[in-house]
Amino acid sequence: MSYSPGLENVPATESSISTIDLEAGKIWIRGYSLEELAMECTYEEVAHLLIYGHLPDTRELNEFRRKLVDESLAPKEVLDILGMLPKDMHPMDLLKTGIAALSGFDPELENSDIEANRRKSVRILAKTGFLVGNLGNIREGGFRLFRSDLGHAANLLYAIIGRRAESWELKAFETAFILYVEHELAASTFAARVIASTMADIYGAVVGAVAALKGPLHGGANEKALEIFQYDVEGAEKFVRERLARKERVMGFGHRVYRRGIDPRAEVMKNVLAELCNRIGDDRLYRVAVRVEELMANEKNLYPNLDFYVAPVYKLLGISPGLFTPIFVASRVAGWCAHVIEQQAANRIFRPRAIYTGPRGQKISGRG
Ligand code: CMC
Image (cartoon, rainbow, N blue to C red; front, side, top):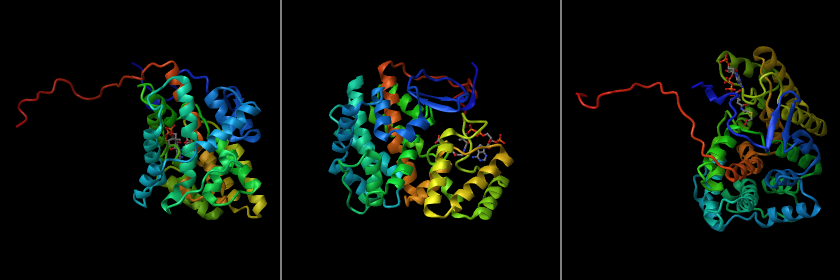
């Protein structure tokens, strides 16, 4: 048996959802470039592309937008459960609990045919957005309802910041939100597919994916990457050098697939950060980012991933750090659902082998 630690370069499934094309420097989502989708589409259009397999026409888009608002309000019982949990619980753990609890209210929980999975995906997408937007508000005993005059990303930002975002704020937020939507077989997506392959329900697969995303080596990196941005350029350089000297990781750098260059999503967010800094007339965060990027390239031959450039953008938008990874969930849930639908439509259970390194033939008797 050949073995690749971390399954590096091991194809684990066939998929028509997305691929990282290193030669073209693109991420293709059902044939469209993710970077172009992020610049030219709304989140709902891209989520529709993932869940239904095509970009929506006007009628489909209006209906999808309406459903995302109509289906958003989580049951009172779920809000009550979240309100009872410890105040210092990480928002990702609240969210995991919230999505698990939502499963109890879905009448189609045990139906895993394609159309039922699509209908459940829309409900999960709508309610996950609502929960993420309101995680802070629920702890204060309230929530902000999603509004029919706003798109999904705008509603999420509205619930988080408590006012309708300016168009330039929404553009920055929604660009990041779309860039997060799908990324081939990331650890959380693989986790979702493994769970789905047992023919467990789609909520279980999403809860497992949320648990995987929380880790600092995956989605949790966007919250951790923020640490660097509390410093000025010199302070950030010192912080990074000290971490490297201690052989610690600098969050927001490196990627299993992008070994030799910047993640194309990070390039887009770098421009978004530059524009935001221009608009507010303070370029400290951009200068810090560029210096750290140069340093990491020179010292470690490592390049930024999306999380590195999202962290300062969210900071400038006034979003609290604990929500960085939950927002990633609210976006990626569309990708996870697409993978669950694809997996269960032509399923074979995942059951790999381990290379055993333990002993054999131990005697149970004679232990003393
Ligand atoms: N800072 C410092 N050194 C690093 C980093 C980093 N961020 N990333 C990798 N390295 C080093 C690592 O120590 C190793 O060095 P050596 O060969 O001397 O032991 C070498 O680079 C190869 O690393 P690896 O651990 O074999 O790489 P991997 O493919 O297993 O891990 C990774 C990929 C993303 C987990 C890793 O680069 C990392 O921990 N990065 C920081 C966390 C992060 O930003 N995660 C977000 C990933 S992208 C978005 C997402 O998927 O959520």
